[in-house]
Amino acid sequence: MSLNQSIQQIKRVYFLVTALRWLAVGLIVPIFVLFMQSRDMNLMQIGIIMGLYSVTVILLELPTGGLADALGRKKVTLLAHAVDILSSLIILFSFSFWGFLMGMSLMGVARALNSGALDAWYVDSLQTADPDIDLQPALAQAETVVLLALGIGTLTGGALPTLFSSLPAAENTLISPLSTTMLASLVIQLVLLAVIAKAVHEAPREEADQANWRTAFSSVPAIVIDALTLTRQNHSLPLLMGATLIGGFTLAGVETFWQPHFADLLGGTAEKSWLFGLVMAISFLAGVGGNMLSIPLSKRLNHHYALVAGLARALQSVALLAMALLQPVVAFAGGFWAFYGGNALNSSPHATLVNREIPASRRSAMLSTQSLASYAGSFLGSVLLGAIAENSSISNAWILAAIVSMVSLVLYAGVARQQPRISMAHDEDVPLPESS
Image (cartoon, rainbow, N blue to C red; front, top):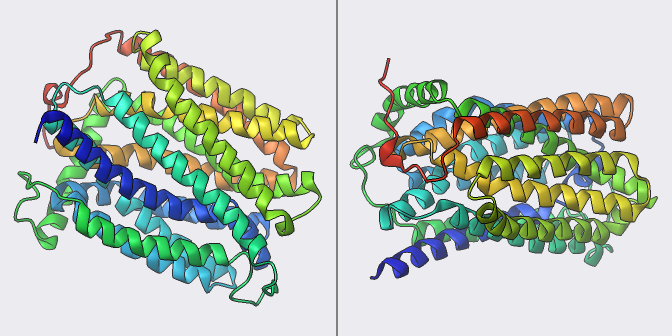
């Protein structure tokens, strides 16, 4: 198999798994908060539920990333999706605050297990096939697949409740218009589990070869210590983690509260669910545009990825202010789409900066460290912005999020000062820290 064929095969497998994963997520994205509200959850309770999800990810993020490095990325990914299926079943059957807490906690476990595992497989496989590969376009292409899958999922997820509007919508009804999206997502998750088992092939690695669950768990603490030590000793990673935390903070504020805010602007709720799906789907198309723009913009700016990431974050800050202050539905939607376009524009340059600072043998753990920062920000955003939304207004919560978002410009400026070089740094140039 030629070099190009090998790289294309890696991409095909990763893109297929990625598409199925985010299609399942996209189905519930446009109506999930409405689904919880339909079962008598208020905004404060929803903020706490989403916050607990983030806390669960925070607590397990590094240990599960270390487990993927020690045991193998495929095994941990399979476990992650099995737990995800269980969590979706619990949420589908939940009619109480405690039921949703349990379901979202398990979803947090699944997210922590999944975080960084297959992403690390993708990056390592590409760099094994071609050590000189430029990761930014490959990461941007992968993110485009994510957004297209989310866009298709949200259109479908928004349309399903309308298509099944004749179903009963009472608070104590299991199969309601809104719950049809949960059922559809479960079907996709089952297909995804089978595809991962069949299509993903992981070559034996020094630490994962012959590993079993017991030895893998015993090696996790050392891997986590190495990951934290590397982060502490690196000049750029703490700044990038800070920017990641801020990104999680602002994204939580938008994802959690845009649906009730948009419903207020429309003067309606779930009966217009197709509009929620349409708005969210267009936001993902805006994200595709942001991803595609990141490749020529990075080249035009001479691969100064910190500058590209900072410009994207500035766009998100302005978009948040527009969402908070503009009342017309079209103006709000424009700000919403600009926010997601900026989020996508930021994604692959930021990921490239992170990946070129970390060694392959600790990639899952280090990507989990970044994800941990994101979910720490998500937790803070869910709880703090949830309290502001409940006691003041969603608009005021978004104004605060915009102010916080601007702080990340300073962090990216610091990364740019630390990394004036243009050439890519490869994994083999990054030493492992000595275990303490």
